[in-house]
Length: 473
Image (tube, rainbow, N blue to C red; front, side):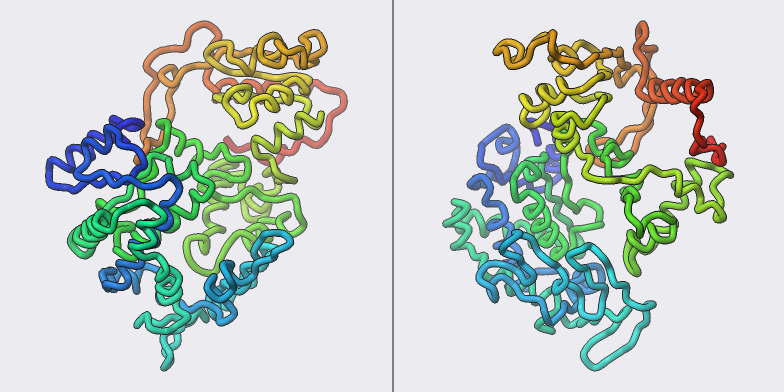
């Protein structure tokens, strides 16, 4: 964190000056290690074994925050009797298909709750009700055991699963001595509970691993057991690489999300109306039980007074996803000649995306390319410079791509909001006007849309304009 996020790390240093204990678990000894109370070296990629042993230690020593665990996690919830863990099936969970290498999670459902099938469909439980029984408490047909003793409650499943993770395993797999492991375990327990909290911080390193999601999920289990989630000074802090990388996810720039992490409608029969879309994406319980309110609020923000119940709040005018439109899949489609043109904003795939040679060949398969940047980047001059031009694999005169290089405004030359690495949403004013013809992305897209509309309105081949009944802002 000291290396990659020095401004944020100053607060870690200040916390240490006030008595906080800082432990750095990392294969390398760095400036972060030098400023920590203790550096614990670990073999790269072995984090799950280390975290798993900490989970096992917390459970076996009964150091978990029981009241928190019972009331604020799913630890007391009973899992279907059809579920089988890895020790029952030789290393895999129930529902594994050896031919496809995928899981059908049907057997992983809560007992009496909704069932998730391989096709992604959901069978919703009936309306929630509460009923006291001798075996525990029933909520919305999902059975719970607040004593955490039922063999099929989540807590007991976690306890059995992580029992294999021992200090001896950590020593063998992670290269961490038993003394160092005990030091970390004691520090976590001493600094967690009713009066204190512990935070986990990773400077995006975990997400770079092939098992990154599992590492972060394991740390979440540990933090939930200790009561360190959703409380001041606790949590899991993922340090993002740039000021508004998190903000771009929130906005979002991901092709399959709408603002608020609401999934994009899909071009399939069961998502053509607002009701069908809500049924497919919502849930009976939890955060997404308010899915309908989130999407209606968003549609009203976009379409204003024109968004009304009788016209599905304008839902029919949202584009529908017809396939995988992620970056790499799109570039593969371009390489195969399936893409006429492309807009590049804040991105340089010719050198900044995986398999840069493929990226440059894909750009050479386009008819047109619009690049908005501060200078002439590799993705704008690939047709005259680059390894493929030097080797003769691509010839400038044979590349059909017409490139339009448009000047862009820098972050200080435009106003707007951004999300810092702490996930705090902040507004920033424009410091100065952009030079020459440089413009912000908002200005560019807005005026491009106006010109496209003007061109359409002057065209003799008019079709029904899709927003004719939506004259909102």
